[in-house]
Amino acid sequence: MKDEKQVIRVRNLFKKFGDFTANHDLSFDVYKGEIFGFLGANGAGKTTAIKILSGLSYPTSGEIEVAGFDVYKQRELLKRNIGYMSQKFSLYEDLTVYENIRFYGGIYGLSRKEIKMKADELLTTLNLEHVRNKRIGELPLGWKQKLAFSVAILHNPDIVFLDEPTGGVDPVTRRQFWDLIYEASRKGITVFVTTHYMDEAEYCDRVSIMVDGKIEALDTPSELKKQFEAKDMDAVFLRLARNSSYQE
Amino acid sequence: MLILFGMPIVQLLLFGFVITNDLKDVKMAVVDHSKDSYTNEIINKITSSGYFKLTDNLESINQVEGVFRKGEVKLALVFEPDFATNLTKESKAKVQILTDASDPNMANLAVNYLQGILQNYNLEINRGKVLPFQVKPQTRMYFNTSLESVFMFVPGIMATILMLVSAMMTSISIAREKELGTMEILLVSPLKPLQIILGKVTPYLLLSFINALVIVGMGYFVFGVPVLGSFALLMAESILFILLALSLGIFISTVSNSQQVAMMLSMFALMLPTILLSGFIFPIRNMPLPLQLISNIIPPRWFIVVIKNIMLKGVGFEYIWKETLVLIAMTTVFIGLSVKKFKIRLE
Ligand SMILES: Nc1ncnc2c1ncn2[C@@H]1O[C@H](COP(=O)(O)OP(=O)(O)O)[C@@H](O)[C@H]1O
Ligand SMILES: [Mg+2]
Image 1 (cartoon, rainbow over the protein chains, first blue to last red):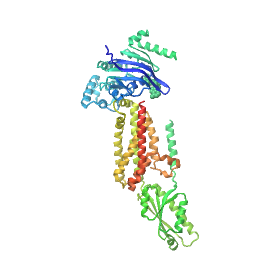
Image 2: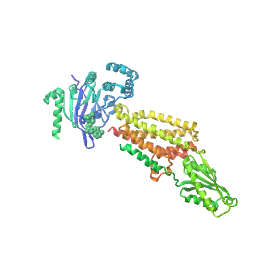
Image 3: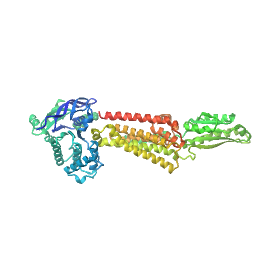
């Protein structure tokens, strides 16, 4: 029942670092409200692509539109309409939970009142009221990640980009994290998430699988399993990975 | 590892090279009220020693201070009228040595050398004579009459602290954001790069400015270092230097990805040269030529000259515009480079 409106449109995206091609001819669309999984092994080029989509770096070539804005010419507008959670942990460790929320709210131009309201709402949802004035550095990783995600969508973006948000987190917290993702998706936020945990792929509406900078497969998880006659996404991925090394 | 072992070696080399306490071609003015064969001979002796170079012949002792203010000439000799007559008739003639003591090490050294030369001359002309002639030097210091080295230290410390706070702290704090990933969040936000940089730099600008005030205040109230020139000019120059240091800090942070790298770069590229090559501790004129040349590209070198001139000599802007221009040029270059680098980072 997804709205068929494209919110990300990528055509022939190339990104080169010198001789090395990190993203090779990527073309895909992401639709509004969708949870789009961007899968690939370490070094496949996921972070490179996500940075281009979120306006952090320029592509070498290709046509890219995000939230209706061109990544070359309309960066300012684009940045206003997206959220981003980096692969590195991205809250200020030596500020308190509330100070971090206030800081990011401030950056995105939310008013004092809005910030306070959002902070209360967010802390209640996460059940983290009791650490409101604790320094981020003192919290367990799982809590930090959940906070970082909530802060990334504080300004109600059209799209949120999550780069390996569950890296190094225990399975229980990972599950809770995915609940947050669903919740955001229900509110109409399009979620673009990278991961190298194949089990998480099952939670996505559609996934693309990237191998050595190229998109080797793109479909719903069930279609992909059918197509590759595999019992789970892990097997799909293994098959693709094997193909790629045979070709070389 | 290389850095750990390299550092002491570099330090050692620098110290070794820099601490040569020899004088060379110190520029000297002469006020010769007598102009006779004796004074001529003495001047010749002094200039042929290689330590001193005669640059100005002045008419009156009143001109000396003006020449000192310009900063080139560090030393003046004043021969009394009828020098030769006094020497031959009364076997006693006076010569006055005036020095610019805003650089006390230098002044002391120069006076010692001169006295040595005059002593030799005394011995020479008295050889085989019954009645000893005597050329008597009298010494007078300008600008820093009590010859306190704290006078020298205040400008140097000021340059060092401002460098430390502005450049080193800025570079480390920006590098820290890059290392931790918070920088990406700032870059991905609607904030413009300029806003991000200003946001990072403003606190350090304020902090540095307060530091500058504290240092000058401490110098004045605790050590009695005067501020003879315009206080406003002094502060304006300090702000210029702080801006320069901040732009250096930003530049360093754009080329380093971690706090350690930023710190090392600041140490090597900024702090060591500031302490060793800026003329703070070791007089520039005594360094070997290559180091003298290098010292020209070290910002604090110019800043120290500027504040020394304002504080100790009380000169106005007309005497320090050249140094100021150098500082402005350096600031422009580094701000330009950082902006360019910052853009490239977004590639
Ligand atoms: N700035 C860069 N310069 C050169 N090579 C880079 C740069 N950034 C990433 N790469 C290379 O691009 C490849 C893909 O990296 P990345 O996108 O981070 O992979 P992933 O996020 O899928 O693990 C890697 O081989 C990496 O070394
Ligand atoms: Mg990555």
